[in-house]
Image 1 (cartoon, helix red, strand yellow):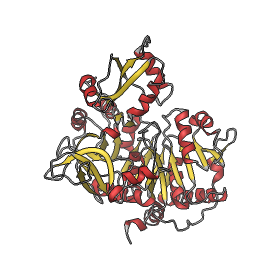
Image 2: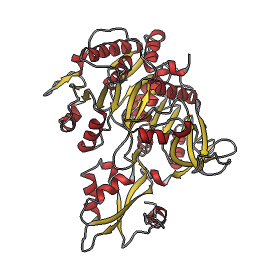
Image 3: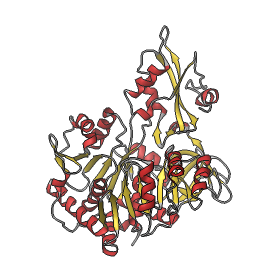
Amino acid sequence: MTVRDFGVMDMIVRNAQIHPDREAVVQGSGRLTFGSYLEKCMQLADGFRAAGAQPGDRIALLAPNCVDYMLVYGAAALCGMIVVPVNWRLTPEEIQYILHDSSPVFLMTSPDFYDMTLHAEKRLAAIKSCYLLGQEERGDYLPLTGLYGAAVSPAAIDADAPYVLIYTAAVAGRPRGALLSQANIIALGTSLGVHFNLGPDDCHLCFLPLFHIAGISVALAVMQAGGKNVMQEKFDPDQTLDWIEKERGTIFYSFPPTLDRLIEKQRESGRDISNLRYIGGLNSPETIERFQKIAPQVRFAVMYGQTEAMAVTNGWYDEKPGSAGQTAALACVRIVDETDTEVPVGTVGEICVKSPCVFLGYWGLDEQTAWTLRNGWHHSGDMGRLDQQGFLWYTGRMPIKELIKTGGENVYPAEVEKVLLEHPAVAEVCVISVPDVQWGESIKAVCVLADGQSVGESELIEFVASRLARYKKPRHVVFVDTLPKSADGTMDRTAIKKAHGGLY
């Protein structure tokens, strides 16, 4: 048997056999053991099949973290369907594009996002049924509880079957769906389990959104190890401290500025966080040092990865601060030049990976998939170097893949630039990242105005916010007479960043 013979479905069945009475998913007073989790997943999978679902059909899911979210993931694995977790921070127009592109058969949402989903799904003929998570019914949306059928044993599902379709930030104005198989997720869970030494006594505090690869991968890795996932709809420092203490929380992932808020609340309350072992995510050295003063037993994980290929490298912050760790379990990494030739140790080039964690491809984009996976390696579009001990040092993005990571969310400048150029006052624009103490990076727009036009900074910021998710709006706008150009006439982003990329 290879790792690719074992899928998420098999993991759920296995856990119910060996940990039937251990808690698997918890939210408030709702507590599911691994045995009851399997039973509910089988009932929901039977309901999908009775409603006409076929293997490979998509389930779009727009909701906060909750037990039902995990049940949909589980039921999809049991009947070979594909979950499309939608980022609820996007605008209705952005959500509509994702739904149109993925053509889901079922659409599921929570009451909080009913209005947003209703706007987005109106033009989608592929959708057979819409459901509200929980017991509520509204309009044409049926309650999810009404979909449950009999607890029928799952049929055999190929571990290579597509399982999750996660839409990444827009490279050229439109997001791309990264398709991962059940085997991809199991391989990722195995890799994370090795790194964190996960086991049945681990408890994941799940407040990172489950529409992100980091959120769902850690949740399923802990489940794969027989551990417990505690669901939180959104980050709340008081509730998180409560979980660590009462649920014996051992691990969570965070993005700025959540950890700073947790430090403040812990110092105010004096809550016991001695159970906590590991924290992952993007955190500044200053924040890490502050947290270790209140929890010296905690180790901070570092990692390099993407939705398309998670756990490329991992390690610990205190090993080599500034590095992204060493090659992860189940991965091979090499650094190549523009001819796809491996470069010597210490030389900067494109980061490439070969791993069972590497995704199947981009949804409906065969040429982009073939280019990304050329010569048998996933080409990340990111630059870095390996040192003599095999530690990866990330150095930036290739020009073709300009990316801004703000508060854990990916934003491609091209998408923001496209919207800004729709404003009549803007003739040219270059969107760049600038360091940000609170968010890690923030977005800055360097604009050239059209002849005779004038516009204020706040007006342009709100113009973008009205058309894209609010985290994609610039936080800073500057106006210049001209933008420097390269010899081929394109904008010289390096020169623009040098002139306008200072700390904010």
